[in-house]
Image (cartoon, rainbow over all chains, first blue to last red; front, side, top):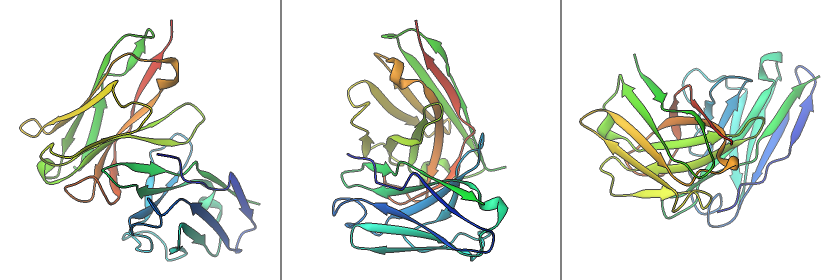
Length: 110
Length: 121
């Protein structure tokens, strides 16, 4: 098992869009449509933002969207808002009942 | 109220053992896979272990396999993590988490607040 690869940080001004990538292998991200994304504010538990690659739970703004191409999944945040500043983690099934998180990406709203 | 409440964390010496517990409420516990996820201070999330609804399917991270044992008691709506041979690098906030289906796949849709484990002499 290896952690999925995410950029350490991304930033954007309010109203702009940012994209966070999550790169794995054909044994995890590329092999299953079980990629999810979590938002974590300091001192808080993670919150589900996207599941099954591109589905959005009720209550999550449609500014958040997910996609996947090959072994790389992506989380896009459009119309960036101050409250979007947080850490974001991807999560994928990795076969044989194992799971894997990405290393996390800090989103900064300039 | 739908919630997960962890307990059992604390300060422990290297090489010793600790057992974490998680009590679930507000949902049908034995319908779902359960997970343990940890987060070292200032670090990212790390998946630790998962157990299917009936305990038939279990997965462990390489970093804990052979030292940690996950289990559940559906009659008590409880999840456990027995941690042996603890190391300094096991110091973390341990989250109990609920999966969206009965087997270890898919996503996490409910998190507890976590219980802190500190391994130090």
